[in-house]
Image (cartoon, rainbow, N blue to C red; front, side, top):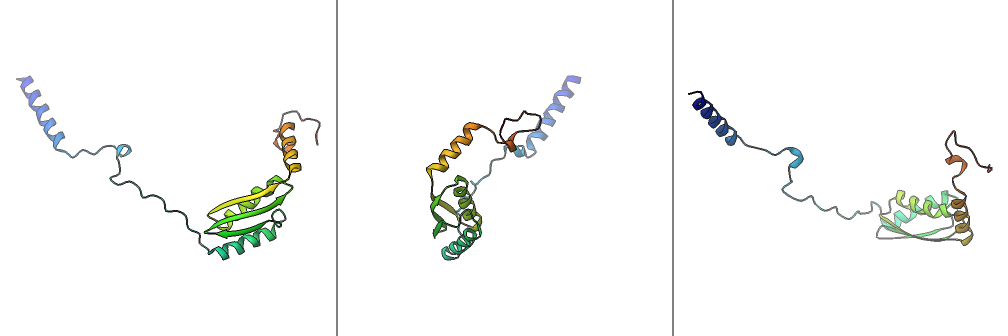
Length: 140
């Protein structure tokens, strides 16, 4: 008789559980629609306005003051020559911060600057990069 009650109790529990709406855990929920593709970023300023902003940033900076810039479709095209490698990257950053959608950086770095950078890499870490407790080399 006890077994009969146990069977009936299991049948009732099974019926109740199968009738209840089951939702998968949130980590397994698959959205019904795919997320919308990101639209291509649009510049907030017109090309002429953006070009003026970038030129103003270049004029304020001693690192990019000799570069020329033109903007087409929100893309900044930078040209010029430099003797310091870091100035090329600085010009790209300034254009992006000004609002350019993309940057086409065609700044030419001199051979002397490339050799200096290669020499610095061969020498190893600079003094500012050495952590406390490490022995210093003979450089200042």
